[in-house]
Length: 158
Length: 158
DNA sequence: GTACACTATATGCCATGGCATCTAAATGGA
DNA sequence: TCCATTTAGATGCCATGGCATATAGTGTAC
Image 1 (tube, chains in turn green, red, purple, brown):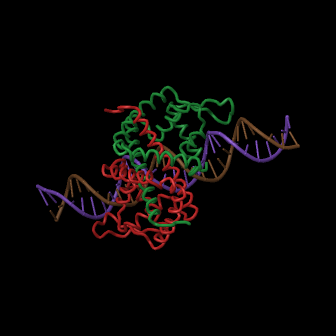
Image 2 (cartoon, rainbow over the protein chains, first blue to last red):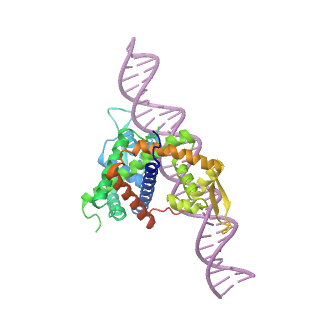
Image 3 (tube, rainbow over the protein chains, first blue to last red):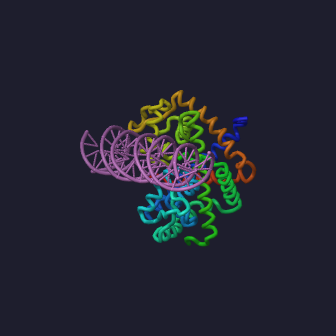
């Protein structure tokens, strides 16, 4: 039955609110540092890192990974290409799509930016995520992500 | 020292990535349900709930709560006012600002929407957040939020 | 091989948030 | 009291993402 007991309901609402607030503030904080030191923002760092770790991906792969629309992903790749950090190569197996890859500049950028991110996260959340409760939290959030992805929860339309 | 050992660095990066992916998908999923059933999106639900629970707040209070800019907050209130869900009342103590409150329509809307959110969260994350690891996770995320707020991490400029 | 349906993604319009700027009002001296 | 400074928030311009649509290429049935 829906809304069975309100104690649990309030708990889940609080958890969701805390989650969103953490994400917003951490994302903003990383944005500030990445913009200042590398001229990119967090979403671009994540895309560059994904391309580094999954060369030959297509636009739809990035869209699925980040749960954003295909159109937005295409435009994001446009911007990375304009800056000379990524390229679209023809896909011999399907000429409707392209295979994405980093340029050398893009590779160097993502490696440098990764150090910034690593340091920022160590400073911002390292202590809190230490220890057994931290380990449990990492595990639970990882599991939750897997479940949401398995069920295709929250995938935009286009 | 920065980037001491890469195991922990990779762990924090994974955790952050998982956190952002969970937030994105849950936010999107709530958007879908709230838009369909109540004609609002998650950010509006959260603003309405905040106003219900903190009547007489000012624009800056909402901006601090949600870690978004003052300008964006002001525009968000404009939209809530246009829909007749919130009002700006003159602040007798400081005529530069207004005191915000829900209308009756706004109150009814937020109560109805809260049921939708409660049910959606129970369905989407209830099982995963159950049990001792779930309890540890709620605690850690709550603590992390408090620390980020205490240190004013990730507050936009304007 | 041709027509039809389907898929991948590029593009256009709109909504929202960031940041800079503007204005009104409060505050703090001289 | 009066002016300079600060503060609260409103507004304008820009960037980004969602969604709808357009376009090109693929696969299938015949």
